Image (cartoon, rainbow, N blue to C red; front, side):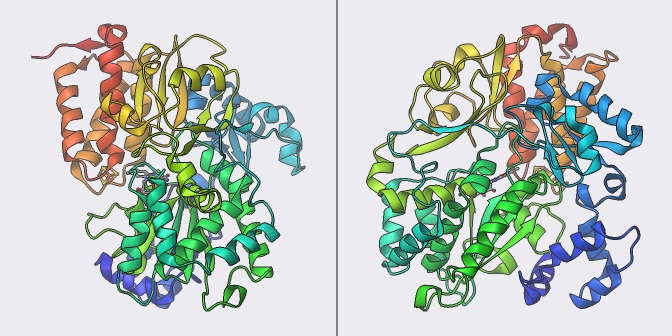
Length: 552
Ligand SMILES: Cc1cc2nc3c(=O)[nH]c(=O)nc-3n(C[C@H](O)[C@H](O)[C@H](O)COP(=O)(O)O)c2cc1C
Ligand code: SF4
């Protein structure tokens, strides 16, 4: 069934993609007007279109009836700024006009909210009257700096179209095998979480036989605490787009798409502007720079579903299916978008590939070690003295990362959640034993992931933190597998009761639930959430002993 939808959707393709059609209809209509027409145009049933539409938070009537949305990501929650913010917005707009959105990527300043298509944070709420009047207000930007001996991600070697043209001209006239070799030699692994070697992924896709192939940039950065992809999309768009174009050249693709989350309006604007400039200069489109290579880029805007960061759900979303996770294999490199061979890479992976081609693979591989090589963007939230996004060499001691680069903390912090809601929760005493290294984090029972850091203050109750994690999973689970769909809700219910002091948590049952989810879930959304929860139980069990009951 889903194969049929992929193929039918693929007949129209990216230019008039079904997901965009469904989103547009839904956002511009108060009822079901137009669904039938879309179904007819794409030769699908009305129920298929309705099923897809109803999957997305932003397309639901209840969401569209609201005007402002307060960020409920982990960093904003820990900062304690969101309840007063919500109250102020409700006073201005009405009780029923204020909703929530998960992580707007303003973790470095908090008080984040979304209003009328724009994000605001920090002191912006003081100018709420101007914002409501539609006036443009001056906003603070994140601080960014590279601490690497060679910068691959933050330098200005690809910041204008002349530079872009020179570098593109060089590489679309370079042997494809040589480009793959550079990526393999660099030891670049995917920055989106799974850590698959980027050169190998491109090579597999290059070898997959097909007339049509796609390049997808995964810009659905939903991890709370992370705004590094946002930095690259907004401040280094040419690096990201160059990575996609060169990937297209190498694998034999003529079309790519950036799936950018709807919570990042400025990123969408920046990438749109960069694509248009490249098209105007003939650096995208037919026969680029007089060669036989043609490549075009599209943007797909996410509609508020965290699971769309998972690559098979992301592909389903672009195709206009419900964004449910698919079983792999087949992997996207052989059967991806519209069932054609597809490279799906994270924003930072693509920008790093560009940095490697410009600066040399040897410089990248010389940093860190073979499995955790090169540089990585690390994000610090507002509890740090130096909040912002930084380029750091892999292998750097975490003590140095937190204290020298991050400047230490403004107030006592008991633990850090690194790598988003699915990443480990690490007590301060343990983090200082680690280096910035994917394998070291995993071996110690944590996860480096995208290297976003959320600080958990000393007085923040861990029962509430676990409740937040289960609530997030219950809300965002795609519903495809039973352990994920049911487990996340059962966990949330247990912690609802503990939070409200109506019942204690049965520890044995909780452990069984976590083990079942870890072993039985189809993907890492509900399958990895036991990691941070088990970390908290291990290191902060004492703090929660009054909320637990040992059920033999
Ligand atoms: C629940 C879930 C959410 C994910 N979210 C993202 C995301 O926001 N961005 C991303 O690049 N990868 C995300 N991934 C990983 C992707 O599935 C995929 O591995 C990645 O985009 C591949 O790119 P890379 O090889 O460059 O890392 C997620 C995976 C899971 C299981
Ligand atoms: S683990 Fe959760 S998000 Fe992943 S497939 Fe199962 S229900 Fe969906």
